[in-house]
Image 1 (cartoon, rainbow, N blue to C red):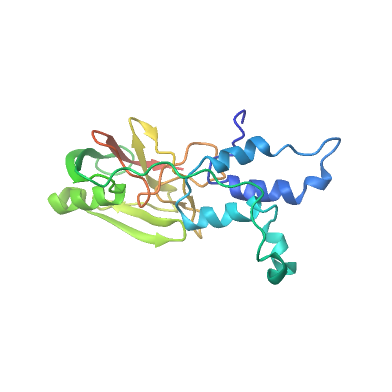
Image 2 (image 1 turned 90 degrees about the horizontal axis):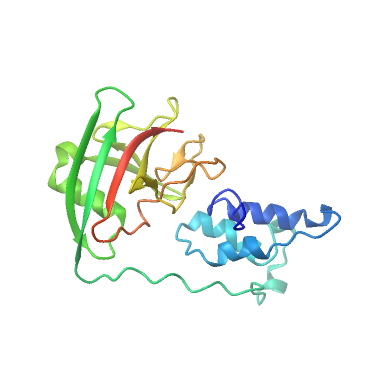
Length: 225
């Protein structure tokens, strides 16, 4: 992409590793990595798996170097550039109100429900889901599982994602997919309510890291990938 993005922000780590490892094969000029690295420097990564993908690239290495890495000789080595400071966190004082909706027009009996949830400022989207389920468990109950990319919402209102049907719960804000990204599960299913980084459409966010702002409308939509 013109802004240096390769795929999406969560595919950048592996993409940079691959380009760095194969730079000697580029002709007639070297790969100019500055623009792509600027995208990584500007992002506040939260998921441990994404961080693990990015860190090797920041020191000019890839996973291919692990077998021959001399840890004693490189213990003082630091990235060629310093990461930009993370974006300011949302203040944790006071309360915010978030409109949370769930929608299914894909399978079985269609439904659309909405609830106004009050949570402390700085709360994650996962906390919004939890409060909604506490206030109206019959409608907003959900299930999730922990993955290497963080919590993955597997079911809302009794409707479960399925790898066989290629369905999942996608999270949106103002009809746009949330941009925190996600990953792929062991069977290729999207994790964190998001398409895999290798796909071209926008990733939805990790419910355990995204922090809604006051007055935001978050919608969980049962979707296909």
